[in-house]
Image (tube, rainbow, N blue to C red; front, side, top):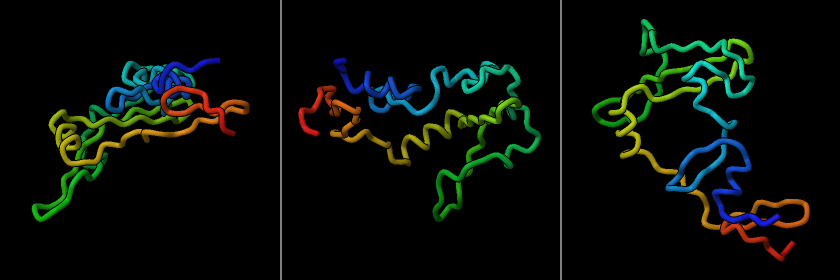
Length: 131
């Protein structure tokens, strides 16, 4: 089997996440189903969310700290009542912009090897003759 690209290699691992235009795989396919009421892990429609929360400060992450104090960001969290799978999302676009400006973007290594039993695959999608 020939692999065309890094995107193809990563898409075979499972979910989709774009990192500088490259599709990466971390979660099951259709991972945004939780927001639509379906669990991507077990397909249950018993999904609960905290978007109507009375105390938003109880579900936050710290995204910055400094001389002006800590910066807390509320999260919208979705939990499957059947299997317990959880997804959380930054609630406010302004907080997401802050994270994009202040946090470090994870980048895929320029060279990595995904080994199969017979043929290791390099980041450019070619099979390695080594190994």
